[in-house]
Length: 274
Image 1: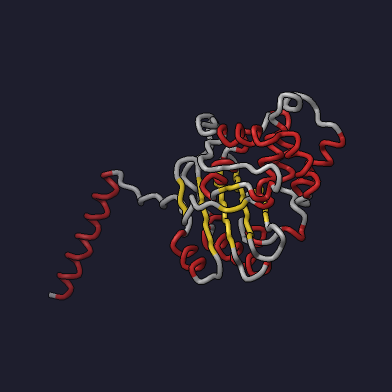
Image 2 (image 1 turned 120 degrees about the vertical axis):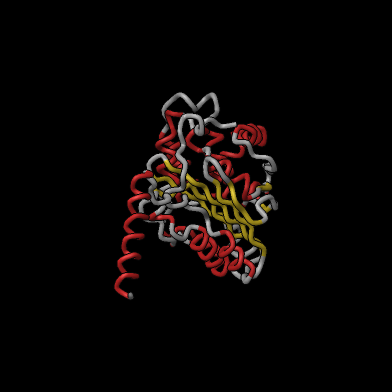
């Protein structure tokens, strides 16, 4: 009797397998990667100070307090670079040696005198035009103490995700190379996170270095896949503490990314800036 039951079970299993094969059914494809928002928010809640973040792909956005405003500190510098490169006097010609030196120092070393020079060139109007072109909704420039310009994580991910379209074609490769070449002493936070297989372009901002603000904004690219990330913090216990907050949030948000697909590419339609 037991033998007969075993034979019947085996026959039913074989029939079920045959039915699945005949129907053409296939295993469900793996879900596209998504940022681990809950894990990052839990980590952020245990840290001193205020934390805001946003993650954006061509089709979706996620965040925590992503529309809260913060003083920009040096994450304004990529906007200064792009606004300068978009000016009519620069966008279609080769950069002069002094201009290349200024932009290299601005981005790779976060040079403040270079930022002072550029804010005098592009002004508030140039930054506002760039913000509108990037679809930013809450950006408010300050031209005196430019590090007090008002930003949000959501706006910064809009800007970084659109960098390819915002940069003039003549200067695109050069500007992106600068954002990939931050000096080792400033490659903290997301710069310490495993994103193997993805190219990282980013900029940090830390004000006076006291922990009052610690920010990072980044674009990650693999082939035609892109995602942007912004983490803004205020009132950390120290600059070192703020850097660890940035690393912890980024590591949790991006967990699993090196082996993943984000489920969307930046095609010609996505490259268009609103």
